[in-house]
Amino acid sequence: MHEDSDETLMLAYAQGDAKAFEVLYGRYRQSLYGYFLRHVSDEPTANDLYQGCWEKVIRGRKRYRERSPFRAWLFHIAHNHLVDHYRAQRSTAPLPDSLAEESTREPPAQLAEDDRSMAFRAALAELPQEQREALSLRLDAGLSQEEVARVTGVGKETVKSRLRYGIRKLREVLP
Amino acid sequence: MTGPGDRSNVPSGAEEPIPDALRDAWCELPRAEPPSLVDQAVLNRARAAVEPHEGSKRPWSFGWLHALTTAAVIVLAVTLIIPQRESGPPTGQDLEDQQRLEEDVDAPGANQADESRELRRLRSAPPAAPASEAQTEAAGLADSADTVMEAEESAPVRSEFLQAERKSENTEASQPETGDAVASTDAQSRLQSIRSLLAAGEREAAREAALAFQRDFPDIELPEDLAPLLSPAPGDPDP
Image (cartoon, rainbow over all chains, first blue to last red; front, side, top):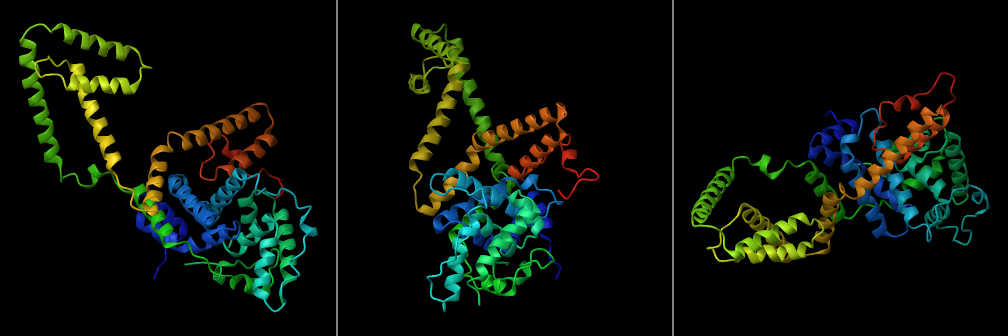
């Protein structure tokens, strides 16, 4: 059976087809929710961010253009929404703007070695926000490195270095 | 549906390689799902955003009722106003009322509550008083205001979910005047500054600013006059 592309569905929704949105929503609800949940510690905040992001998608539906891949467009909005959230909470959750401290952090060595999954989650939570986001956009959202660069507004080399540092730290807790 | 555990989601390529072990561990992370209430709220909001207005959805249903109501209002107005106009000059009280109404209109900063009270007083005046056009209009306005106020006061708050939905609807209703206006003003001023840079011959700075704009407002299209800034110039490195 032929499956409509994300872009086709988004354009159909912009023209008033609510069913198209439902399909699109079904495709991205989990990855988008996962994206927010990896960045904020509590579920209610993730719920707010998630709902707010979709709200922006709905409100911006007529401005969507097919030449922009929907996946990248959606996560771009999600990224900006997250940045806005950090800005609003700057005093309590500062948005790191430097990679200087990244190499000094260590994965939590005190965790039991046999509990790899827990160690992995803890190490992920310990990653600087940019590295975690780069990984999340690659692995949760399925964006290419170039798309991650575009979404986060940095160069491809920066993304590459964020991924490299992140992967290096996570590998320390992997078998 | 896609998700963290969906491997088709994970691009493979010659970029920064992601080790298989990490991919596996990532896929084994708990698969979080949004609460169903949130799902429902988003879908309801999406449907409401593209739903046609009531009037255009059921053009046949109450059309006759509207026509009948309009006709009844016109007949009533004519039967009330014409005999009163023929009954003689207005009384002193009427003139005073009229004058106060005109003063209210002349003073745009007048307190709305006072105006509302005044309108209610006029509406409760005995029918012998001649109804000017201004009074008729004012009464209509007060009626609608009362209806809205009553409806709002009697609306029960059933649950947190309904509150959230209502909040979402309110957001939709108010944002064009507040949030959007702010965002729009911000975007406009950013576009203006890009144009200024361009006019000053600072093309590279303008390009940087255009990139930043695109990053900050992904759902706003760059105007045609600025769009060429983002197309890669020959010889440019990878953007």
